[in-house]
Amino acid sequence: SAYFFFLSKMREDSKKAGKPITKIAEFTKECSAKWAKMNEKDKEPFAKKALTDKNRYDAEMAIYKGKDPNDAGKPKRPQSAYFCFLADFRLKMKGKDIDHKEIIKMAGEAWRNLDDNEKKPFEKLAQKEQEKYEQALSDWRKGGGGASPSKKPKQEENGDEDEEDEEEEEDDDDEDDE
Image (cartoon, rainbow, N blue to C red; front, side, top):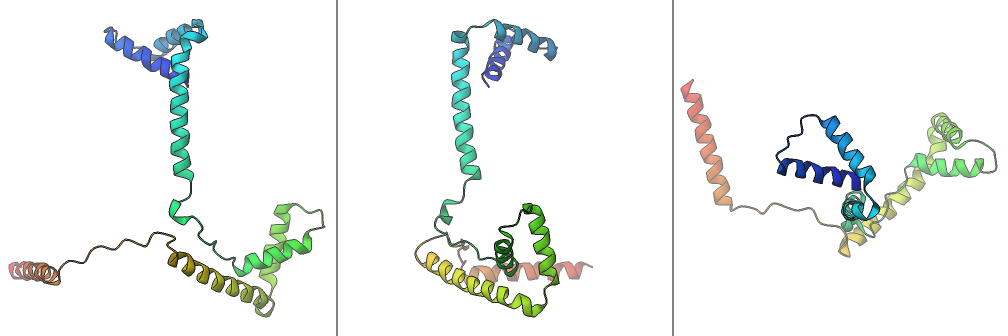
């Protein structure tokens, strides 16, 4: 905030004047009193710094929280069999006046009570969605989407063998010492 920029300046001014800050509470009270007596015009430079800093922070957070730019247009992962069942279950419960959490609990219990034959249609649907997803992901990657995993450049085979031979010789020497 603007006040914190003001405090920072007051600390710097105190150091330049050669006044060590021994009691932080007293120093903060003095600064607070000065801040309260200042008019808006005097506070303006600190407010500008605070606004600039807030904009910087917001930009950094947008990058931090934002999605990876390499994932633009990437297909979404498919639903599992349970989530296919859950979507169907919600449609059946749509007109009823039941809390969302309660519907989820009921769906979980209903899923656990289904036998394998009753789960098969949902598993088949999930499998179809998985196949569509894999195809779409393959197409997306062929189209230049996503960064391919970086691979370490291969070293010359002769160089690798020499290093391995040296390590083996060192190991052999260690065994002789015992």
